[in-house]
Amino acid sequence: MAPRSHTVTNQAPPLVGYDVFTTDRVLTEAVDRHLPPDLRAEVREDLVVLGRASGSAQVREWGERADANPPRLRTHDRYGHRIDEVVFDPAWHRLLGKAVGAGLTDAWGRPGGHVRRAAGFLVASQPEAGHGCPVSMTHASVPALRAEPEAAEVWVPAATSHVYERELRPVAEKPGALLGMAMTEKQGGSDVRANTTEARPLAADGEYVLTGHKWFCSAPMSDAFLVLARAPAGLTCFLVPRVLADGSRNAFALMRLKDKLGNRANASAEVEFDGTTWARRVGEEGRGVATIMGTVAATRVDCVLGSAALMRQAVAQAVHHCTYREAFGGPLAEKPLMRNVLADLALESEAATVLGLRLAAAQDATDAGGGEAERERALLRIAVPAAKYWVTKRCTPVVAEALECLGGNGYVEESGMPRLLRESPLNSVWEGSGNVQALDVVRALRTEPAALDAFLREVGAARGADHRLDRAIRGLLVELADLDGIEARARRLTERLALVLQGALLVRWAPPEVADAFCAARLGGDGGAAFGTLPHTLDLRALVDRARVEV
Image (cartoon, rainbow, N blue to C red; front, side, top):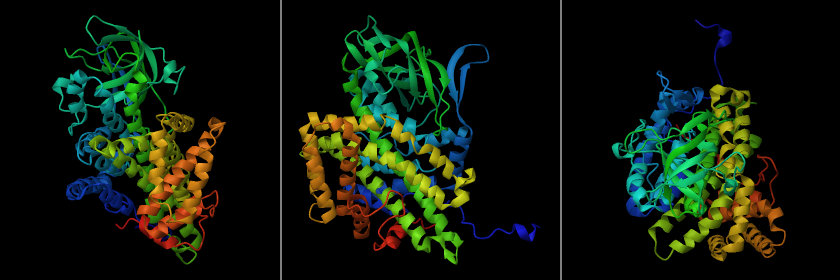
């Protein structure tokens, strides 16, 4: 019998055994909003299955185990043969199997494919975010692969398969495959045009051998990689398989795994190409950046979705804890000041989710063709880097504040909050950090007038509904009218673009109390720099109730 002094009281029960999808009102509303009626029942059924799994004790345990037992590099087998493999905890493979089986690499060409996949990605990332990296890159590889029909014929069906197989074998012998990327080099980083990896043509058309060193190779256990290297005509995109058609291993030397702040379940590596590394050209020689841009845009959308997932999980945990934890005579969630904090966090989470699903819907419209396709493509050109810049930057302060809502309990590893916090900066760094995104927005403004037109039409759909949004749109137009010295204020401009877009979407689609709070605090200046500074006159209880998970 435990001593009476050790009786446990006033502790919140674990948030486990629930449906991550159906308990997220914002996400379920977005899925219904953006899908045609004839698809909703089928997609909801699939997402409920994934949602129940993602909230289960078993999958949560897989996430904890995968993070606690990070991958290990195995360069040689027991006989001394070079094998360059990465060994993962079995939980990692179970998470990947669940994600691939749910179709999270299969969006392109599927009716409503990007919206259903975006919702699934947001759900599956909540118990463990690291396995989303190979899922994201495999999904995003399809636009680049399509630039080379012969490669696409083999690799696109493998990449979009719903079957996960971990063994390295020729792709023709596998029911499904994963793809990674190796773009950046130590001297260039985000400036991929500074890459020095060389590609030498072979006699067969489209075949090359590579020589060079890649500083970041994401998901090095994958079956193939998209790689940038310098061919005779300039920077070119290549597909580098791990196993060649005859079953032999390609020359792909893993030098070391990165010891990262977070994302520890996922492997990132340095890789060496020794002059015999076989590669197939993807797209035209000298057009590597253009070939890869569709892939980059897709992974940037996933950065938005991944950050939205982290925010949602952090906010759900904070609201859950404060609902059950009592202090000063009642539940924490009922205390006016704590309610303000929770409402402010919920507001940020909702804005991120609504924006992320809108980007997915635009990609669906682009893929479908027709009258809206070009306008939606133009909207993505400016909305993707703006959303990637802003949503990923908001993730860390949201998670940190949510952790504080749990007090000392939140600072303890067992709560899961430290893992969320370590993960939270990643999406801001991956696929181009903040300055890269802001400069990409500037590039779109200068060179693609249709992008700004599409953006203004999108936010214009909400004009007249809220005076603070109208004033913010007018202020944005004034700023856009003067492009002198725009690079130095590119972050400021990108932030405003993102906030105005979020405000317009919420005004159109969110409950009035949500839109009112966002416009007041984010556009009207009636809020402070820290969370928990919303105007007290708002309906804060409604915002918190909307974010609460009912178990």
